View 1: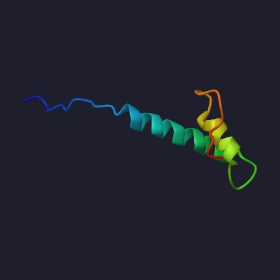
View 2: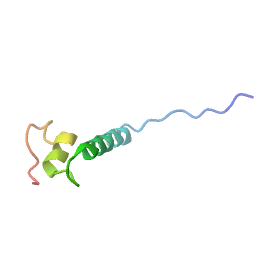
View 3: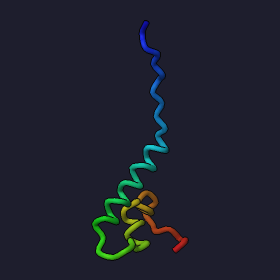
Length: 58
């Protein structure tokens, strides 16, 4: 009898979030201080790059 196979489902949003978390971990491990600055986090996550501006929340 052939083994049952379940279809592979990819959650593209979850995969993107995992990738962003990985980028933050890499940046944090390379940082000199204990924390990443808000500006560095924005740089790593490319915040404002798509809109061409900084977030007004800061």
